[in-house]
Amino acid sequence: MKSKIKILRLGLPKGSLQESTLKLFRKAGYHISVSSRSYYPSFDDPAIESMLIRAQEMARYVENGILDCGLTGYDWIMEQGADVHEVAELNYAKEGLRPVKWVIAVPNDSKIKSVKDLDGKRVATELVGFTKRYLKAKKIKAEIDFSWGATEVKPPHLADAIVELTETGASLRANNLRIVETILESSTRFIANKKAWHDRWKRQKMENIVMLLKGALAAEEKVGLKMNVSKKDLRRVMSLLPAMHSPTISALSDEGWYDLDVVIDEKIICDLIPKLKKAGASGIVEYQLNKVIP
Image (cartoon, rainbow, N blue to C red; front, side):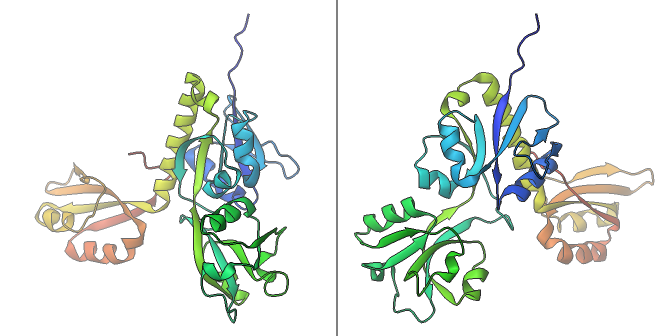
């Protein structure tokens, strides 16, 4: 009799985080097929069953055990007050690797200057529950309306202020809005159902997924560099390398020459390569990384 195949039920965020999440999983080494009409992405790992769920709902389904685990924003965990186990924070969003912010915003010419000025005012937002709790804690009584979208166009006629999600603030500025206060910072979280987390097999499976996802994220901002260096220039070149650890040094067949291999932050590469060349490095090769596992 065949043993029953163990399955991990994984929720992937549908909507704004969908493409960046699928890209991250693929970089982590998972082959995923997604049909435009299906809510059930197919993994090359038969032990993973996945479903696309809106990030706003993810924490509730994980808490209830319909899903063993999933990825969603910290904001939606807080909004739903979900009782889940947070496995890891994964710093990526729709457009970059920075946390996003929920902010109170008003028209540029509004008389509202601080959160206290919202007393008695109307606020539109998708983050209704958290906004109500936030203002109540500050003893501010305001009418909070759920916004179905296009929240930036609500002020001043449909609302006095909005609580809206922003990564760069560009959309707010484009709609002639200014930020009054940030009420919540959020990043993507890998969450687990508490019962599933105490299942040894499922927990190990989740930890492995998270390790690979973190490795893929770490590689996003780093590159590898290989170069040839003569013995006389070795110390000077090494002094320029801000490696994660000591660079790997291998002797070449040409006597007195070495191969150096390092991992560095991509943001410094344009400034670093000319300095390395000037210090005596040659045959410099920059290459992309898929994963960096500490």
